[in-house]
Image 1 (spheres, rainbow, N blue to C red):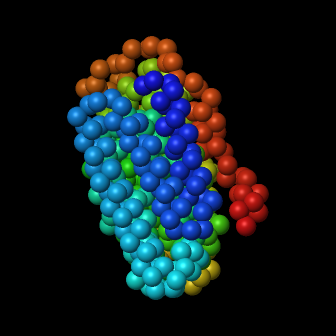
Image 2: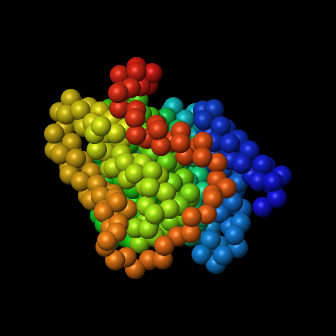
Image 3: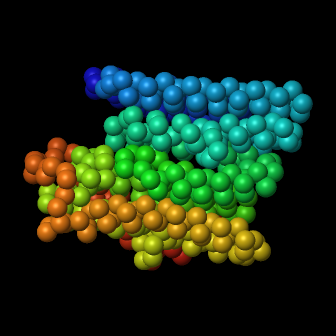
Length: 348
């Protein structure tokens, strides 16, 4: 892609998200979301592969539907209350429609069906943008409107997402689909705690972005898109294989890695709010996700020689990818747990 075009598209992505962050008026927020969607579509379709074009079409249709729903809900709210302000979502129908549309935008279950299919059709870097940056603008709106939404609806969305994210990833062999289901499960953790401690939602979102970035950049470096490709990565770069296994366990939420921190804090807060049943369901749903991360770790680190492997050994070619983003995201994805008190202090 032409570097000037790429620069315009990436700056438009940034502009759309910033516009949504800065707005308290529904029209401005909607405009930011639209700029965001229109800027990523050429990036998704840049390879002109039928799968990429199909994924782009699916993404465009779901995002356009969600944007139309947001517009309809905000217009309904303005019609009833006489205000376009986000903080004044006093109409229950409008607030429920808005949260449903935003859930569709970020891929929360049961509005998640587009997410694995779209991610599977993209290359790893565009998939990384879709899984991280594209979540920020809708999340800003969800956090601003969550207090007006029925708590039962938020809890239902959160529990459904963690269960679907865990179950959906169990029988997958494609790494991008596994990361899509992982994203759905993490979104569920963020939504479940939103009504009780919004700062923990931000902590969970931040750690999720760093862990997912580390996972995508590692897969990009080793050019892996299937589980059986992972089984031969150790011969190409053993140290990278070790850190990747740890990043996957961090995504699963095992101590003493960074991924344990948001899960631990969220379960603790749910217990404080006298919701032991919800906390138990969330903890058990996390085990489902952990199973498929352990499956990836097994494929990477325990199927090495003298076992026979059906996949082709990769060439030890030099990668042209910059190693700094991978190093930074991996370090943050592995070693942030001791910083928990400082992070909590910054978040509150």
